[in-house]
Length: 254
Image (cartoon, rainbow, N blue to C red; front, side, top):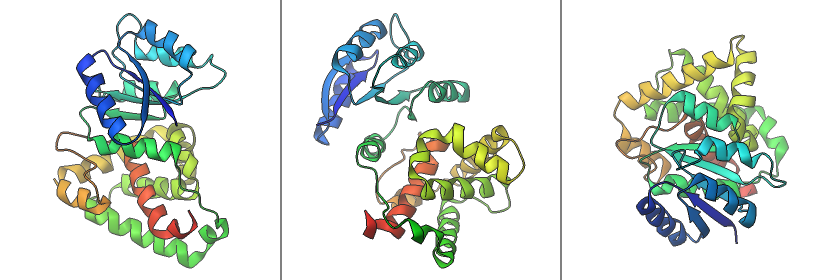
């Protein structure tokens, strides 16, 4: 059974989160509200995954992420934070966080991300991805999803977002390296910069969100993945669409 360590300065939040995780059959081995104590527990327990807020007492979450680099085995880290500032998001991801989930968030989103980490889909029929007819069907399905989400085709971010989704479909493990692989690859394809790709994708997602199609979005993915006051990061949004495409087209090969 995978061992989870929870880090949050709010004790009530820790209790609620632990209950949610255990109801989904995840084992929470320990928790901490203090960053210095958290580092000690990480070294002693060597958890498989850490779910942490950035705002910890004594030592903040960024320093905890820095300390993880010295471990022989680095656990998966999911940052959950009320801070949606892009600088914080980027810094956490650069320091090794695999996901950054903005609070408040639906429990299903966190469980989905944990499931993705520990039970990733395995596509064994690699040649099928290069099939021209299949690629056309995937392109059509992505277009249909974008239409449902209210993302207009005329904005630049539409093309970049489409390309990012296709990259993750073809390389599922890339979802955890969005800044190191996906943005630069898309940028190279369209002769622009990775930062412009990131901003354009962010804009495309925001435009879709302004259409206020939350009900359609949740229906599309079959679960309530987004709450009214929640905004997904670029990586979360790309991963969710790619997961849906992979399941629809490759589920027979899991």
